[in-house]
Amino acid sequence: MTPTVYIVDDDEGIRKATTRLLTAAGFMVCAYPSGDRLLAELPSNTPGCIILDVCMPGLNGLDLQVALGDREDRLPIIFLTGHAAVPDTVRAIRGGAVDFLTKPIDPALLLEAVDRALVQDAHDRTIREHRKHLRERYEKLTDRERQVFERLIGGQLNKQVAADLQITERTIKLHRARILQKLNVDSMASLARFAVELGIQPRRPAP
Image (cartoon, rainbow, N blue to C red; front, top):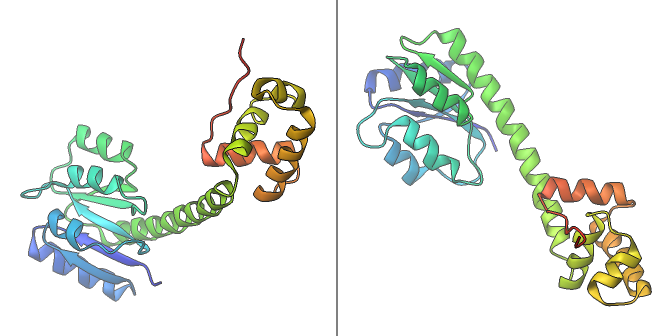
């Protein structure tokens, strides 16, 4: 899908000027007069980025950033403001904003920020897609295999896992082989990386 640059600004003049600039540079653009409109109409899983005004009636830019952060497919944000305040800038950057630009807009700076935002979006989407595939493989494990998995990545040996789960070591070896096969990994190091990428916490042996 072609990336779309979403502009959110209550100033019609700014919206039109920014739209003309980006369209002339070859970008697909969609503009909104408010954050509420964007939230209501933003399609899911669409590549792109958002150019967002800070001070707007209703939902302001920083609050909209928080609302958008709840989406799994959240887009990178470039903030625009007529009155840059240090606390706002810090909050925006901590929230993951690509840039915080002041009005009047410098066209070159804005275009450069949009390029960076779209590169970040493509990178983020690649990571999300990779994690989705990992999650699909992990969900193939049975409950017992997940119990064994959590203990193996915690550093327990087969015999320790067997004692912990009160089953035979031979059964643990069978579970281990199935886990490696289902997750498509070939070593314990790869299994550990798999867990880290999905954020799965190891089950540590009881003291």
